[in-house]
Amino acid sequence: MTMNSASMEEELQLQKNIDEAKEALELLTRQKGRPLRSSIVTFGCQMNARDSEKLRGICEAVGFEDTEREEEADFILYNTCTVRENADQHVYGRLGILTGLKKKNPDLIVGLCGCMMQEEQVVAKIRKSYPVVELIFGTHNLFTFPKLLARILKERRRVIELWDGTDRIVEHLPVKRKYKFKSGVNIMFGCNNFCSYCIVPYVRGRERSRDARDILGEIRTLAADGVREIMLLGQNVNSYGKTLADSIRFPELLRMAARTEGIDRVRFMTSHPKDLSDELIEVMASESSICPHLHLPVQSGSTRILKRMNRHYTREDYLQLVSRIRSAMPDISLTPDIIVGFPGETEEDFAETLSLVREVGFDSAFTFLYSKRSGTPAAVWEEQVDDETAHRRFDRLLETVRISAEKACARFEGRTMEVLVEEENKEPGLVSGRIPHNLTVHFPGTKEQIGQLVPVRLVECKGFYYVGEQVKIMQA
Ligand code: 5AD
Ligand code: SF4
Image (cartoon, rainbow, N blue to C red; front, side, top):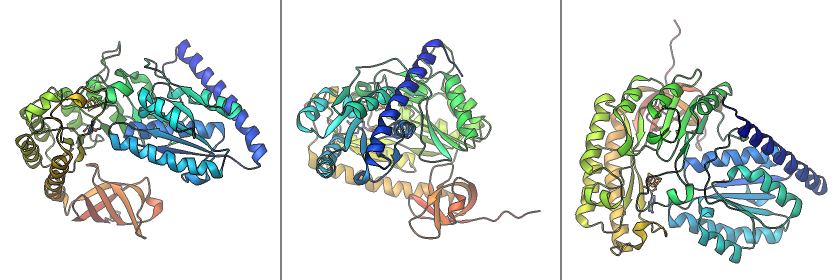
């Protein structure tokens, strides 16, 4: 693993800050006469989920007990998302509830971090109207969390630290994984694409890639710790490596990740269609541990709208890409993100989105109502689609996706596939997991199977998921 003197110094500093926070927490623990509990709540995407595992790892290293029950926590940290307006509203609503909790427990510490905090007007509003929030930091300085935590535990006054941006990537933060058997792995941070509706480039900053040696070292460590499935994470994984001195690009990185001993499955997201190369398709098709699933956001089926979205591909480009992917991997699962009601979207544009959904036959789709994000170009365009029209189109899109996905998903009926078991089902006696194509399967099993690869016959497709039965392997 790479370790220059700057990063060594950074890690020493990190450890010092963790020790300092730990000492402060020990004092509070003695005063309370019981362990203190922290609750990290995640909003938003896989990147945030992975960041939360780091935040949780830091809390654990400092000595907090982790709890999912906010009402019993001494420290609550919301890792926020701001990609759409309703994500913001959700956080404000929850802060109201936390104000009530704080009245019952005046020692409670409430913190906010993540994408929402990179917006000046949000932080101004919280400073002014939400005194319950005592700790604020952003996406660029997540690694300063131990230092800020030490400060708030010792001094009990508002601690706010926000950075405009950073080119630093701090390795080796403690991590507490949600699942023992699978893990996300960041390969890059930020985004340079500036799609005209999207706030991510403003709140996550410019694209920067992690050193390949660090990434592969982390994957080996995870494999040694029992992880069987990894998900390589970035806003636009296909432009991995562009900011590095090394010439390594995403297809090579993916191949090396796929060949790591002990790793059975590799996934990745998100791919931008404009940067998806034939080399990547070739690597996916030739490495058996790379899952046959591509999350490939299309956003709209209309070339006119795609241009206004600043996506740099046409409807035809997308369809051609899909056909190149399918000729190499005929049964691959494809899932898009789609936005409805983008400014200027006409009935004709929307009809093109519906027809693209039918033509591609996606396995499922993440569908979003366009949400105006201030600071993005599209927010000030005049031709905003009215709410009623947008909602009507959204419902029609959902129905079209449902019909097309039902048909697509059924293609595996009767086949036996390996399921990585993830959890017990709410229904007693059933467990749930995923096939390589990312479809969920429920089948009779026990919790001992969690984390194992089990051959399962996919008996019946129920739309977006399967009901199956374990296949006994005959011993010779
Ligand atoms: N409104 C609606 N959806 C959005 N997305 C990003 N920004 C917006 C917005 N302003 C969606 C895109 C992206 C996904 C992560 O979120 O579809 O791919
Ligand atoms: Fe947002 Fe576009 Fe970057 Fe995705 S590629 S994060 S939609 S700007």
